Structure formats: structure tokens, C-alpha cells
Length: 76
Image (cartoon, rainbow, N blue to C red; front, side, top):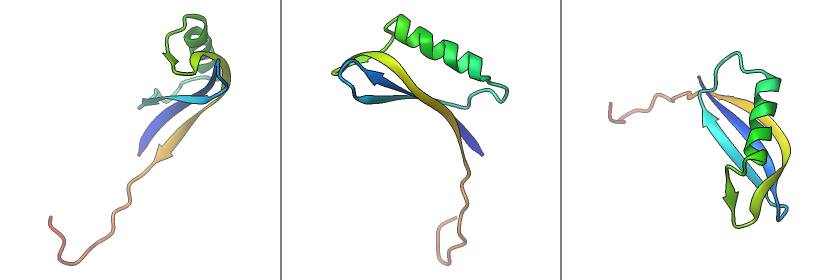
């Protein structure tokens, strides 16, 4: 199962921006993510056409799994 951490921000223009990181550590805490997002905003680490990131929106980890189907005549 693959995991991805998504952190969503608003930029100076009001647009929603997402930073995603694959394979976050299993014991990642709210405080760690919150502090990282604060650092991203305070240090202006990312900027785009809408300006600097200004506000935290939310953060979450998404778990995904690939479930393959058995197909006749498919290559191996």
C-alpha cells in the first residue's frame, strides 16, 4: 500500500496549492506537519503565479492500494 502526505495551502492570490510527499513516516504527528507547514509559509519556500503561500488549509495522508484484475490474453 502506498502512502502520500498532502498539505494544502492558499497563496496570496487566494488559489489552493498542494504539496505532496510520497512515503511519509508512519509515526508522523500533527505537530510535525503543522510545524513544517509553518516553516514553508514563514520562509517563502514555494511561490507561484499567485504569489507566496500565506495560509494553511489542511493536511492528510492518503493510503492507496493497487488491485489488479485477471485478464485473459493479457501480456505477463
